[in-house]
Image (cartoon, rainbow over all chains, first blue to last red; front, side, top):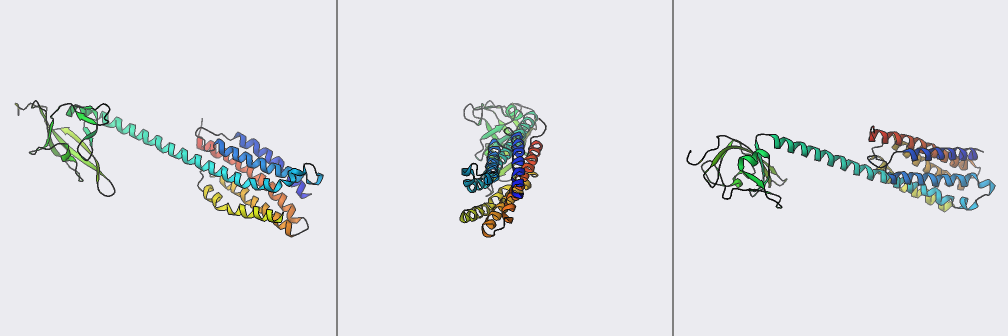
Length: 229
Length: 93
């Protein structure tokens, strides 16, 4: 008697569960994927068949269903496990997507700040080549992006960049230590020159090797020609 | 039949670490305990089935049916809570 009442109650509850599961939002940014929903529905369907087979056992209707009861009962566990795994995978994908979106937003904000500031900012690789320059740096150093190269070049061939009283190129800035308020003189082939006050921030790997250097600079003296100096 | 019931119970118990490991990492905080209860009751139903093969009298057979009804109840509760968890995660549309 208890068994029959329990089976009828289970059948009603499984029907309610089916309706609720179908109404769970899936897809888009929902952590409940279509796969997870399908596995849960399959698990509920397996258990419903088990309960129907159990309820019809005394009447000997659908004996095949009763014979298959053991196997059907077992399906509930792997279907539930697949549902949980599907949910977990979907959750991981959503977390990665959220991280990527915030990284893109942070990058866009940082770029807009760099392009609106009056301070020249360049990123140098360990050899001293410019890999990024903001608007102010492009103007101060007369730079343009090298098409198809993915880096930056100076359009003033023979541009001479030197530390105060010593003639070196940008590689002089590429050290593993920070440089503060270093004066840099940039000389163009026609003799024009600019004197810049530079601060650098090196980015290092865990083993201490230099990855890149961020250099920020402002002009300390107005633009002048060699003759004027 | 006895061997099949014991095998089913052992297989369900063997999957417990997987269900536990994945379940505790899911962000569906309210639904997971309800689904875990459904899993636990399933194991109880399998165990009652094994016991029913050993002891006569129909008590464990009744327990087997009752456990299944409780599994169904847990699934309903789990599905309702999952629906609420998903609504919280997705936010207002």
